Amino acid sequence: PSRPRPKVILIIGGPGSGKGTQSLKIAERYGFQYVSVGELLRKKMIHNATSNRKWSLIARIITNGELAPQETTITEIKQKIMKIPDASGIVIDGFPRDVGQALSFEDQICTPDLVVFLACSNQRLKERLEKRAEQQGRPDDNPKATERRLANFKQNAIPLVKYFQEKGLIVTFDADRDEEEVFYDISVTVDNKLF
Ligand code: UP5
Ligand code: MG
Image 1 (cartoon, rainbow, N blue to C red):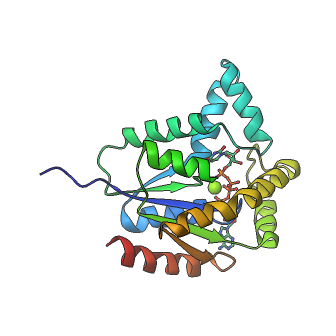
Image 2 (image 1 turned 120 degrees about the horizontal axis):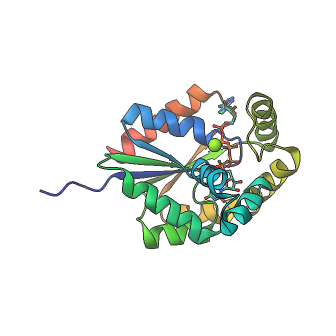
């Protein structure tokens, strides 16, 4: 018999809401594969920015805290997912960023099984990003890019969340709390909805 398609969980939330943190916990607990879309794009841009015009432009976009072009992003995700041999599940961190991307993902890849929304106050987002910026040097962890990332998130979040709500696919979590508390609630939801 043919194998069932992997379960797909999308993790969305503002910059610093804990998408990376919680995605890795889910991947570990359930033995799912982890795909960070931001990391995918950052790696590609670092490799190609000097030799390729398209990627040098994308590098500038990302470093300024704006969104990379939708088609490039979807293509990268598709290629990455195709390289994963036979996963029982895939956690996609930081995607989609807007309704257009959500539609395109469904059209070209699949309908997700669950969308996790990490709802976090602006104050907390800023605190966490500032703290992380001191520890590791991500190209977009500078004050100006952080403002753009927050602004883009604010602009797109409500329609995006509404879109998945209407499809009954999204669960919202209070992500202001400790990592472990947030993860406990997520794992209860994953247990109930996916197994
Ligand atoms: N931390 C986490 N959870 C905590 C908790 N509960 N309590 C206390 N501390 C907590 O967490 C951030 C920091 O907070 C960490 O130090 C962590 O220890 C702590 P993290 O898990 O890193 O949060 P995350 O939501 O992953 O924050 P990140 O900065 O990665 O979010 P962004 O959305 O900004 O980054 P992403 O990599 O997804 O995207 C970056 C850029 O890529 C975008 O701006 C865009 O330019 C581009 N992009 C696209 O163009 N298209 C896409 O589809 C995706 C990305
Ligand atoms: Mg992240």
